[in-house]
Image (cartoon, rainbow, N blue to C red; front, side):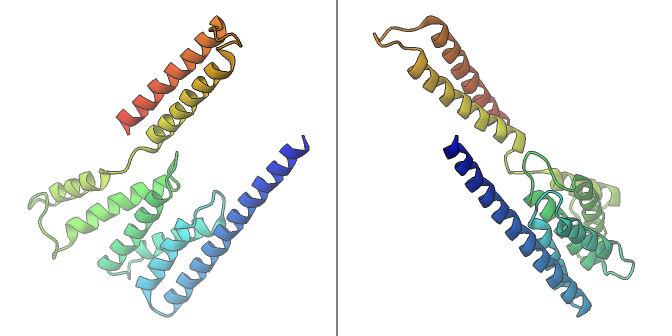
Length: 210
């Protein structure tokens, strides 16, 4: 019992230290972005605010503040289209970089994709990807933005869960499914085999759908 308490205390201390570092780094990046904005260096401000948003911790105020600053800059009527595009891309980059089993600021990501597609289609210096029609160009950019070469988080989680179940089933079979005489204990062996088979199936499905 004492050992478990010590281990739990060490784990909690490590998690607390990591959370503290995330908050401190995020607040520092947010302040750096504010200073750059006040100094009329919007590109540097965007980069710093994106960094702050990437220091993600659920409930950390610097994350929401960083997104709010980027979105405000992107929607400012005085912002040049290229600047607005850069700000929306920062929103998109931060939201996609911090995904796990869920996507932080998923609504802001959707708004960013829509704005990026529209601004990219409006850019007179960009290639006419998707055709000469404006709506067709917007649709083309939306399709390109929707592509994601990275594995789906839920599929990765399913594959990891499958591996854990697979190994647990194999360990159970070794420890409980075979008696001291080397014979199979029917019920534990069947349960271990079922767990192993389920784990293998989950692992395969996760890999296939990733």
